[in-house]
Amino acid sequence: MIIECPCKKKKFNIDINLIPAEGRNLQCGSCDRIWFYKKEDPILEPQQINEDIATKENEESESSNDDKSNDQKIKQPIKENKKLKSELSAIKKTESKTELDKQTQNSKFFSYLIVFIISLGALIILLDTLKSPLINIFPGLEVLLFNLYETLKDIKLFIIDLS
Image 1 (cartoon, rainbow, N blue to C red):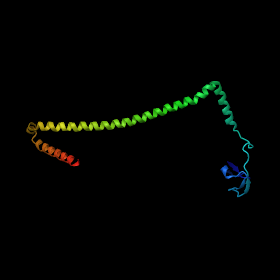
Image 2 (tube, rainbow, N blue to C red):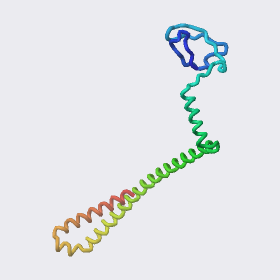
Image 3 (tube, rainbow, N blue to C red):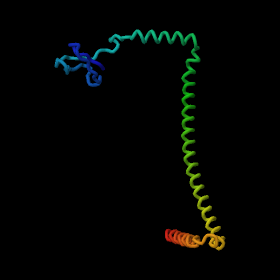
Image 4 (cartoon, helix red, strand yellow):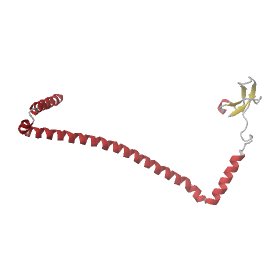
C-alpha cells in the first residue's frame, strides 16, 4: 500500500498488514513529521483510470468485435496453447536429435578405431608372411620387423599384466 506524507514530499510503500484496523502513528523519513494513519475502506477510495489505456482497450475491443465472434475469442487462447506445445515438442525433438548425433559420433569414433586396429594387425601378418622376400629387397627391413615384433610382445605382456 502506498501512503503519502501530509507534507506531500514523500510517498511510502508500506505492507498493509503492519497497520492495525484502529490505525497507528507513522513518521516521515524525509521531514521527520509524525502523524496518525488509519486504514481507509478501499471502496471509498476513488479509482483513477488512465484515459489512454481505457481508450486503447475500447478501440481494441471494438475492432476485435468486428473481426471475431465470441467463440473465436474463446478458442484463441486454446490455439495459442497448442502452438506453444508444438513449439516445445519441436525444441525437445531437436535436443534429442543433438544428443543422438553425439552418441552416433562417439560410436563412429570407436568403430573407426576398431577398423584401424584390425587393419594394423592384418598389415603385421602380411609383413610376417612376406618377410623373406621383403628382406631380400630391403636389407634394413629385418631390424625394423624384429623391433616391431618385440614391441608387440611387450604390449601383449603389458595387457596380460593389467588383467
